[in-house]
Image (cartoon, rainbow, N blue to C red; front, side, top):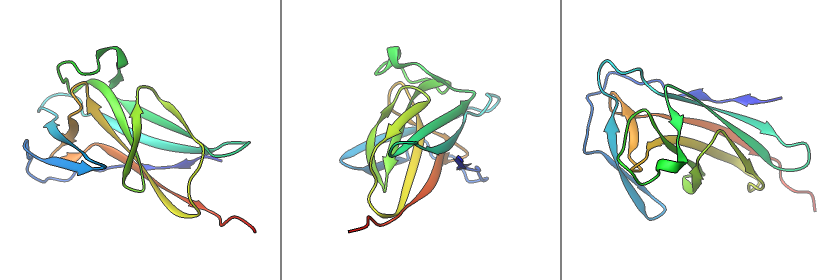
Length: 142
């Protein structure tokens, strides 16, 4: 049975176009969704795999995955996603599905952000457009 993530709900914070994030030796500027444009959303659904691991389903709206345009001009309507596990960037996502084989025992945080072709974090009202889900992995038996 899938476990649904909750998409980030933007608040009324003032946009900050110079905001940067860092983690795992990288930093990306952010770009604010302009007024009047439909705001992209992302939702993360985690499906336990029947054999081992998890199948991550990244559902987006008002946004398109366009891997053929990576590293080109950043647009707020298309690009790719970044997958983080426990705060560490794992990979770029160029589509809606990703297989995650192993996680350490205990509580694990899985987060997906959506990014422009130029790797800018997409934000709305100053908040990153992202989805986050916790996965509890049981301890392995000896």
